[in-house]
Length: 141
Image (cartoon, rainbow, N blue to C red; front, side):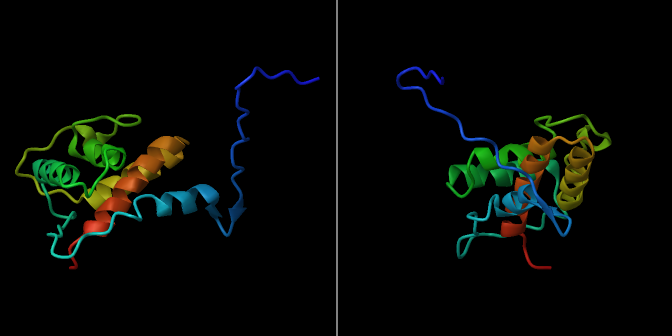
């Protein structure tokens, strides 16, 4: 006999992760993260492979104020600026000087790999979202 309180909702089971060709449902979901963040016509694109932490932070705040970036999608970017720690500490979490040009694509990819190695799926998803955001606003090189 199953007893359920009035107004109580039953939760659906979590989606099962299936592997096909080395990819998971999680990988596909992460790729879709930030996909709606398309750069608007006339919006200044940036080169995230050569920015300072301060420039990334300013760019992120400008996108949030302009409505082009949600607060949910900014978590990984904030972690990349050194203003917010996400997951286990890494060698690149020490703040660089504001004059140091950093490759935020590489830093984010390194953090995704580290989170995957530690099996921290939520941290991996946060940095995958940061990568998706940067790809949307990346200046062609």
